Amino acid sequence: MILVSVMYPGGADAQPFDLDYYLKHHMPLVRERWSSMGLEKAEVVKASGTPDGSPAPFQVIALLTFRSLDEFKQAGAAHGKDIFGDIPNFFKGQPVVQINEPQSF
Image 1 (cartoon, rainbow, N blue to C red):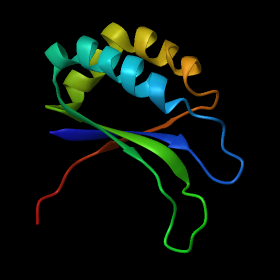
Image 2 (cartoon, one colour; image 1 turned 120 degrees about the vertical axis):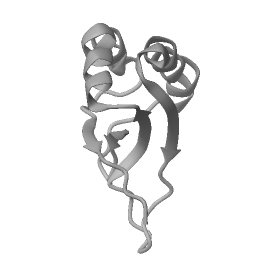
Image 3 (cartoon, rainbow, N blue to C red; image 1 turned 90 degrees about the vertical axis):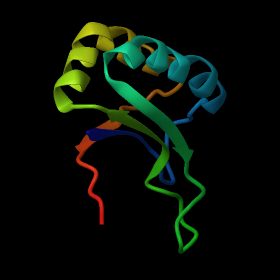
Image 4 (spheres, one colour; image 1 turned 90 degrees about the horizontal axis):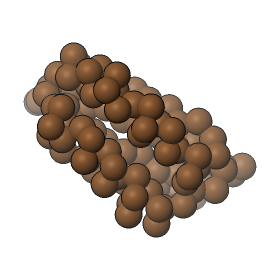
């Protein structure tokens, strides 16, 4: 199992982010295209700030759980153009994508 973090930069000079479009259009597109290709769970978190009150380094983070790295790569190859091509509709910057291996403790 892998956890893919798609992080949209925040900070004091962050690009605007259309959360309404993201939740109503983009994430349903992700779920529609990738659920049959290994996507098991999708969560979105919206930053509120940091402990010292400064702007969060990422304003929105999508957490996508896939059964395997291979399935994520296959999903990206099959539908990445549509999904990543939709980003300019809600964010003018470049997201940071990170592959993570969840650990139990």
